[in-house]
Image 1 (cartoon, rainbow, N blue to C red):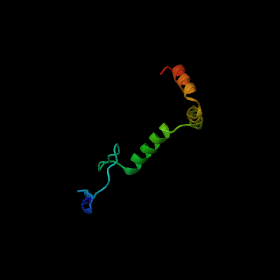
Image 2 (image 1 turned 90 degrees about the vertical axis):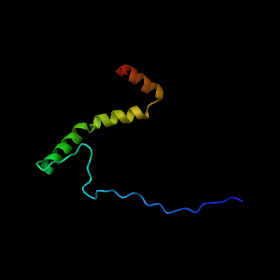
Image 3 (image 1 turned 135 degrees about the vertical axis):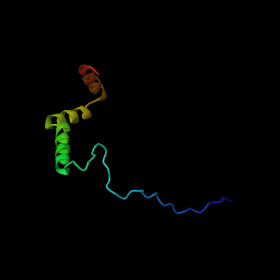
Image 4 (image 1 turned 180 degrees about the vertical axis):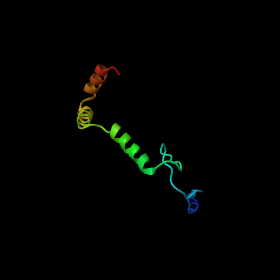
Amino acid sequence: MQHFQSIQHWEPEKPEDDGQLELPGFALDKSDDLLVSLGELEEELERVQLTAEEVELLRRFRRTTAENRRMILQILGR
Protein backbone atom coordinates (compact mmCIF):
# COMPACT_ATOMS: atom_id res chain seq x y z
CA MET A 1 0.00 0.00 0.00
CA GLN A 2 1.39 3.39 -1.01
CA HIS A 3 1.40 6.33 1.35
CA PHE A 4 0.52 9.70 -0.20
CA GLN A 5 1.16 13.05 1.42
CA SER A 6 -1.60 15.57 1.24
CA ILE A 7 -1.12 18.40 -1.23
CA GLN A 8 -0.57 21.69 0.49
CA HIS A 9 -1.83 24.96 -0.95
CA TRP A 10 1.02 27.07 -2.32
CA GLU A 11 0.88 30.85 -2.41
CA PRO A 12 3.24 32.65 -4.78
CA GLU A 13 5.41 35.33 -3.28
CA LYS A 14 3.98 38.78 -3.55
CA PRO A 15 6.19 41.54 -4.93
CA GLU A 16 7.49 43.86 -2.29
CA ASP A 17 6.90 46.94 -4.40
CA ASP A 18 3.42 47.37 -5.84
CA GLY A 19 4.59 50.42 -7.82
CA GLN A 20 5.09 50.91 -11.53
CA LEU A 21 6.48 47.99 -13.53
CA GLU A 22 9.93 48.80 -14.89
CA LEU A 23 10.61 47.72 -18.45
CA PRO A 24 14.19 46.80 -19.36
CA GLY A 25 15.82 49.58 -21.36
CA PHE A 26 12.96 51.96 -20.65
CA ALA A 27 13.92 54.07 -17.66
CA LEU A 28 12.24 57.38 -16.92
CA ASP A 29 13.64 60.12 -14.75
CA LYS A 30 11.57 62.93 -13.39
CA SER A 31 13.06 65.06 -16.18
CA ASP A 32 12.09 62.65 -18.99
CA ASP A 33 8.93 63.17 -20.96
CA LEU A 34 6.90 60.00 -21.47
CA LEU A 35 5.76 61.04 -24.95
CA VAL A 36 9.35 61.64 -26.07
CA SER A 37 10.39 58.23 -24.75
CA LEU A 38 7.45 56.53 -26.45
CA GLY A 39 8.29 58.30 -29.71
CA GLU A 40 11.88 57.04 -29.49
CA LEU A 41 10.62 53.53 -28.79
CA GLU A 42 8.30 53.66 -31.80
CA GLU A 43 11.15 54.86 -34.05
CA GLU A 44 13.37 52.01 -32.86
CA LEU A 45 10.63 49.44 -33.47
CA GLU A 46 10.10 50.79 -36.99
CA ARG A 47 13.85 50.64 -37.62
CA VAL A 48 14.11 46.93 -36.76
CA GLN A 49 10.83 45.83 -38.35
CA LEU A 50 11.23 43.71 -41.48
CA THR A 51 10.17 45.08 -44.86
CA ALA A 52 7.64 43.19 -46.98
CA GLU A 53 10.50 41.97 -49.19
CA GLU A 54 12.46 40.70 -46.17
CA VAL A 55 9.38 38.91 -44.83
CA GLU A 56 8.89 37.18 -48.19
CA LEU A 57 12.57 36.15 -48.38
CA LEU A 58 12.43 34.77 -44.84
CA ARG A 59 9.22 32.87 -45.63
CA ARG A 60 10.83 31.30 -48.71
CA PHE A 61 14.02 30.48 -46.80
CA ARG A 62 12.06 28.69 -44.09
CA ARG A 63 10.01 26.68 -46.62
CA THR A 64 12.98 25.45 -48.66
CA THR A 65 14.90 22.25 -48.07
CA ALA A 66 17.72 21.96 -45.55
CA GLU A 67 20.19 21.50 -48.41
CA ASN A 68 19.08 24.74 -50.07
CA ARG A 69 19.30 26.62 -46.75
CA ARG A 70 22.84 25.29 -46.28
CA MET A 71 23.84 26.45 -49.76
CA ILE A 72 22.28 29.90 -49.20
CA LEU A 73 24.19 30.30 -45.96
CA GLN A 74 27.42 29.26 -47.70
CA ILE A 75 26.83 31.87 -50.41
CA LEU A 76 26.25 34.50 -47.71
CA GLY A 77 29.55 33.49 -46.13
CA ARG A 78 28.35 32.15 -42.80
